[in-house]
Image (cartoon, rainbow, N blue to C red):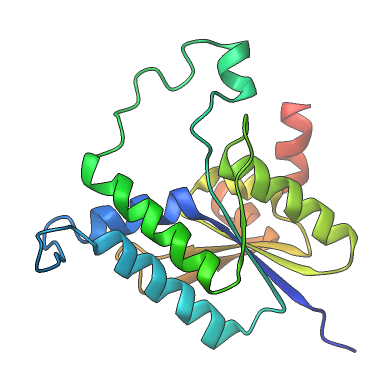
Length: 185
């Protein structure tokens, strides 16, 4: 049986926040006093994926600053969410700059969040016969899992990896991903 090509779809927002908070208690700062913990954590994780997984395709998705279709449907969408920490904003821009310089596909679309982009690409890539890995800490992605779509989740401190499959979703939560999809249909 031929190995299928792999695509790794990174939800940059999920990962950047994860690494920001991993390093918050012991911040990494430059000589100029700039916090770079999220940059370090994200890039280290990205390099590990490239080295260990050798994906044929790699996409990094970001949220866009513009309101999403959800904001138009429900104006209070994320109204109670805390504002992005000020020292995270320049780190996000630095990560985008590095990803672009590495010639890795970076996608951000007005009106959509990174998880919308990853979910759409995941299902399209699955239809094309790829093995899909959604790279995120966000449990919402479990509804996308199928035989060919898996969740690639960094552990609590960002160094260990958990690959979540359809069987693991059923074992842990007692439902199949098909039941999740049917529930929300």
